[in-house]
Image (cartoon, rainbow over all chains, first blue to last red; front, side, top):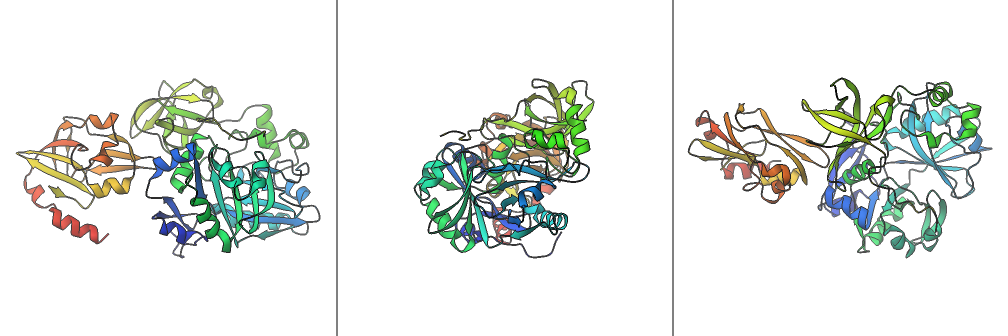
Length: 370
Length: 121
């Protein structure tokens, strides 16, 4: 365990004032839940609008003569084709095709590439990018900015009152806008499966923006506990749990992040393995499991076939507040990955029935067209 | 009613002790979504993990505060785990245990001592 003091965000005091239970996450002191608790926070986000502090995540700009081309040397994404105002989900890969981190990268303006990476990975990511792209592009960390997410079916109506242009954006668009009297970077995206936004704010203005949004009765603060159950229902992988340096994008079902031009050129780290897995079949794939009886299956639980042979492992799992049953993400060989396949999950020595289902567990409600 | 440092409670009627988790424990756990109670007939030793209570976020063991044989388990909790939050020290009981050694109960904290213990957390 690290003895260094936990880092805070520009909103740490606001969380404490709201009565949040604070925990360590990615080296930061973060709210895991507020007094209403994970279950109510989760359901509120699905029905109204939830406000999240995700300032522990890394925000950075990649600048240089051609930062889009430079970024393609580290990722399998189409960044040369990324139009101004658009955002993409992509992956930093190692030479074996394993995932070093998953990230969002956008062009909210003409100032290079704006990226958001995982809090627990950011130091390693920045070092890797700076080393690999030395002489071509530079990473500037935006450590004086906070990042909040406003998620849920009422998020757009709430944000429109303060940032009218936000309502004219669609899913995976990103823009540099002015709102709340400060400069913002707004993307219509998130990690809950709902419509919503992630909003980068100058740190000094974060508390004002946070409190202004919370003053709207449609908005409640949501902690990391519900953020995890929401992303699990949305079937979205979590780095360090469902994704790590041994897992490839094909195994983890992220083929949408492997556009055809890059597959054909095979010019990204680990392309050999990834192209092979696309052509043949990976040894294991990420699936969704619904637990049909007994306790929720959590990370580390073994998955067995109906004969009892262990075939895989749960990488994240828990109780779904929306479905009122246990759900999990697991890796199993493709032969067991068809939706409808009956499997067993081993929880505290008991083999409980489960079945493979299509992801997401709860339908996404992204706004792709206005 | 007697209490443990792991936040279980015990109430003795004759030689049968009813066991559950305290209001403090229920509040700390958050919304309980699943409870696994011990099987009737099981012999438990004090300190054994003998039940499991799960919130959205995590699973937590419940430890037997006393030794004995489980004579009844609260089956209501499988359909209504939220009872643990609503009524932790009454309807949310976990199991009834026929005690092996009455002296074990005397070693547990009374309510005043437990309240004082909570102040130290």
